[in-house]
Image 1: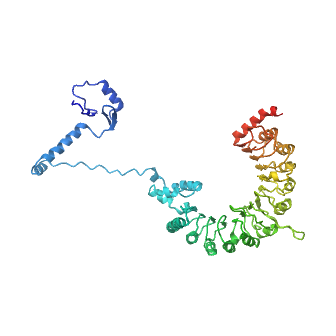
Image 2: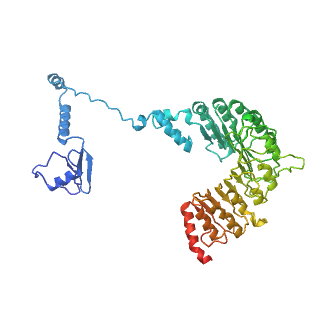
Amino acid sequence: MAPGVAPRARRRVRGTPLAGAPARSAEDWWWDRLAPSGSGYHLLQADSMLLVLPTLGPARARAQRRAARRGRRLRPPASRPAEAKAKPRTSPAPAPQQGPDPGWGDRIPVEILLRIFGLLVEANGPMPFLGRAARVCRRWHEAASQPALWHTLTLSPPLAGRPAKGGAKAEKKLLASLEWLIPNRFSQLQRLTLIHWKSQVHPVLKLVSESCPRLTFLKLSDCHSVTPNTLIMLAKACPQLHSLDVQHSMVESTAVVSFLEEAGPRMRKLWLTYSSQTTAILGALLGSCCPQLQVLEVSTGINHNITPLQLPVEALQKGCPQLQPGPFSQVLRLLNLMWLPKPSGRAVTPGPGFPSLEELCLASSTCNFVSNEVLDRLLHGSPNLRLLDLRGCARITPAGLHDLPCQELEQLHLGLYGMSDRLTLAKEGSPLLTQKWCHTLQELDLSGQGFSEKDLEQALAAFSGTPEGSHPALCSLNLRGTQVTPSTVSSVISSCPGLLYLNLESCRCLPRGLKRAYRGPGEVQWCLEQLLTSLPSVS
């Protein structure tokens, strides 16, 4: 071989042994191991690699066909017709055409796909899953296009947070797509959320009012330019609309009042952000505009409003009496507000109360004016209360809570966050709470309270006094910043096997290394083991 010439790859084809080679050599044996006979593969050997390639056919047959084609090209043109007449070529029988395998996706019935897509939409929402599934194949496109799957939708322009000019352009571009999507996909839409819409709220809601008669819930978050005509148009076109959330949006009070006057008899849930214009909306509620209202939430925005909210308790009970309690419950949330209840006065008769109220949240990060007397005015007619959130209500005492008519309270939150150092807290009375609700309480929050060590020991001992064969329902306990002792904590963990959350942060009486939050049964049991080993040293 001439120097500088690379050696050519040697091809090993089965069935064509080299001339003079033995019938069965070691090399043949190894080659048979790498590419067995009948496997459809052959070996290609070079200096530094060995390739296994698919066999396209016998080498001799391919060489013969190549030589025949070369010979036909070299023959003169005059001899070809004569040869064709002498020996007519027989065309091979056409092989049956086999189309591509449609795959398992096309073999699933549309009804089954609808069930599968429905579960995914329920868990993660329709977008972006349905948009991607529609591009898989025709059957998936047919299933993903069913309006029944598009019952919940959240729309937000893609350029939210950009300059105003770019945001308006993005809203117009999305609106152009919605002009086709809303009539063709959203005809059965039930829940709609609009986020960060600044200028195109009215056109979007107009399309919804024309094509979505089954709408029941509307949420406007950080939306501007919402006019009275827009909400009135929606209330008239959607007879099933009963829930409105306008928190953190710039909505005129006249627009909300006009909407409540039109859809008030069927309104069940209302979320508001407290501002100077909220008084007019609350005035409409006090005037019995929404007799079927079940959920009312008023909270402050990002900028804390220090203007006190004056809300007469008795007038609210008469304006929202929930005439047909049925299976639905009432929820009242006044979150992070400086609520100033109007005094009852001597001539004012007690209100009817809230017979169906199951959740009352008066949580606040600042000191408020909620006292035992105000709480009694709110809950004197609420025997079915399940959740009571009084975080930040430092004027409430255990004696006032013990006098409430509710007997099956499940969640009680009395935490004081960032304000316990400025207040004179009660040192005793916690046993009144646990002795009354130890059998039903599932969540208890006493963080920041000033109860003494002995008082907390008596209170938490109530969870170990349950009858034999039954265990307390307590699964969450927050004792952050209290004077709880190791023996008390170990006792409550042993008595409550279902405890899943335990917060012992900033508890001065506990050993170092254990003052933290425990989540899950494994961490809670680890805390119990550490406490049991540290008890002798502490004593």
